Image (cartoon, rainbow, N blue to C red; front, side, top):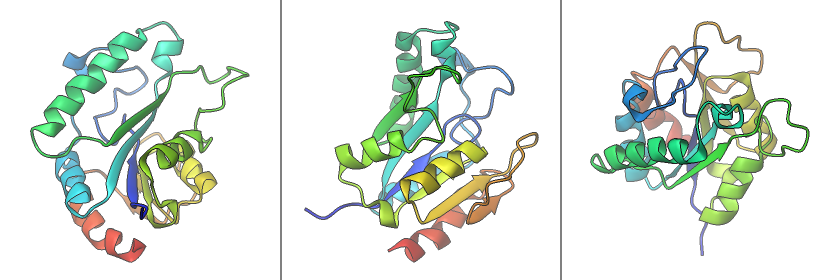
Length: 183
């Protein structure tokens, strides 16, 4: 069996509009980022697996339950499926930032490595799209050759990404030029 390349996406600030300092606690508060559906559809049409890798410590803080997070992701998937853009897998670390036994919190590569094992992914031909240093560092730690940072006000970019964009509006167009270089 040949391994598939993948594009990994962070959630808040990439897939959906960032809630700022808070958390998206209900589906009604979830808003897709401009251009993200086109970007996901493009990746899938080009044969790339699409995976969501997200930190959701709102669960660990008791602001929402795991069931509520699962509901948000189920509704997100339902809407994306209507556009042939649903994720092939969703990986969420719900641990607190200071939880000593956590092995999945970014910048740990655990979510990416688990997705690769479960979905038969070729990480040497894969890409991470994120907006925080921890997203880019997670991809580097997992051995991904390419990273794309969505620049977000208030998020200092100290870990260099291979590509940057000022927002998600032109993400599909940018991926159209990056993806062929990974094969």
